[in-house]
Length: 622
Image 1 (tube, rainbow, N blue to C red):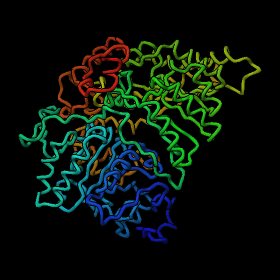
Image 2: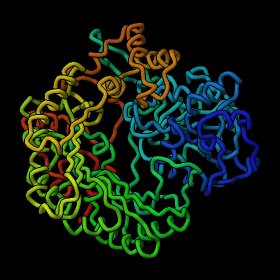
Image 3: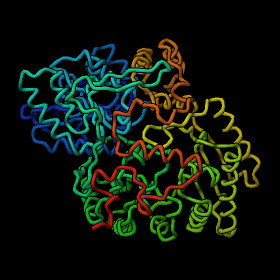
Image 4: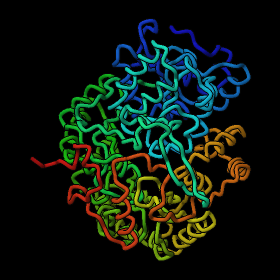
């Protein structure tokens, strides 16, 4: 048994000590004396969240397949342990061997969400590694970031030695092979970073200089050396069926957010919703072979003991072999008592046939992401569904036995009017009417419930709405109350419920999503004021950010409420995410006219992702 980094005294006095002891089922064990590269893979949030993230499991499995590499896991200590570690000078450690992170070669941090930025600084500082990359020397770990937020890594540029832009299965071998040369030579840290910048997908922010115009916009992004690439191309796996996948995922001791087998069936989305960053940056859409998925499902169930399988993708109903896969998974019901979870289904794909296959296994509320209350606004955002689709899908769900529906909307979408807001309440009302019309009184199981919630629209990089302004917080509150009052005026109001998300966190997300390097100092100052776990309502304190913005002369409205000029240079323009800026410009112009773009299987729109040479762009082509 590995000696624990935390004493029994500490473990007995913190919440959920199983977060920190490692030794779970299916962990990888290696001899540290027989490896060349020691890597810590970090999800900068609490264990229960990080253990639910498929990306970490994939990379953990991939790295540990290299005989020369040992990859361990590390998560953000909860505030109770954070306090003790600082008071007693205990360095942060990896779960598998309980070794201090400062003794590793690499600290790899996945950046999934802007509100985890202060947790990243917590992890680096508790690891007793210099927070600023410029202060690190040879012998200290390289800090590398990956994940969706790296398509605009600039607000965190000062803290990372490098970022991996894209899907991790493509370029890490080349990077780690280069590292072994560095480690066993007199190559300097700076020389290694310069060589690493030529590995596909690797962005070294210290090798780029950013200048600004008098109005605060970016003037120029240029490299410091001729041999450093001007653009960093996001890496994409083209042969998705052959890519590494974890057949023995680590099984936690405690209940985590996603406590089940996760089967990734597809990457990308054919739909092209103009607000959706994932739908743009994960292009082109790629599917996994259905026979391989059947094999994976059987093997992962055997290796974990789980009794539930969740299908992972951005739009599961667009997976072309869904029926065949479902039929197979349902055969496991009798033999393994397996539940099947089907997230990310589109309303227009909810046939009675699909619902009947799933409802006998697990019945819960159905989630419909309508996004906007009127057809006009759904066309603006290119949602690709009609009101008829929504009502038909709801009716089929009610006939199939469901009586609870969740509806998701956004407030503050470009061109939104009060008529669109009223449409949210009226759409919820019409859905409730479908229930009363479709389900005879004697077959009703209590009251139908339509739960609608609205989030604050945040424009993201590499979407057609990256030019759009956010509405201001007081206007968001006005619109939310307008919708709430409209719900109260509906005939079936007892069956309708409306809620909305916190405005403060969304404004901050908006600043960080489209921010630049000038925000690095803000994030550092906020962290030093005590900010951590900002994604958790009980720990988020907007006052800290307001103080830091004021101290650093940062105008929040510059990053959020300002509509960008069509030719403005963005802080992320040196990143190539696969979709061209010209395509995004055309989509922005089409949005202003309410014009719809067909999905990728109906017609290619020339977004640029065909240059990767795979996926939907080449389906059914000789």
